[in-house]
Image (tube, rainbow, N blue to C red):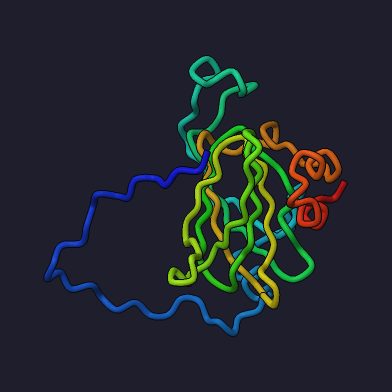
Length: 195
């Protein structure tokens, strides 16, 4: 089920000067400050805070989509997503692939439960040497749930979905059926579900 994606073939050319960027994220910023600056609001289903930053103007007609979609969809969507203590991304799955981008803050632990019965935890973050992922693809129909790593105070992520996100494609996970199907992760599943 899990295979590494090919890396991008584009490379920076040698000798090109890259301008020095000023620091955009101040590590001392609180979750409340980030939410205020980015206009984040509570996610109505998943938990955490979010704001949609892009929805493609181009629409994919229903008859051009796979049968799992009930109507036309935007070609893609993107959100900011923030986790802080006391919040988590509930176990859920989508009909589309979702790409997570780690922007700032503390690492995030993600549980993924695949349709073939395999499961894994993955750490989103900026510490590449520790095996953290600054970008991560969650394939369609993979159950996913996330929380801050222990001791974390805030994490700012981005999520890109294609075809674009629609609440009709969102399915919330239920603790006991998932715990029975993936017993090795039962405790974490119960922590990342609301029902």
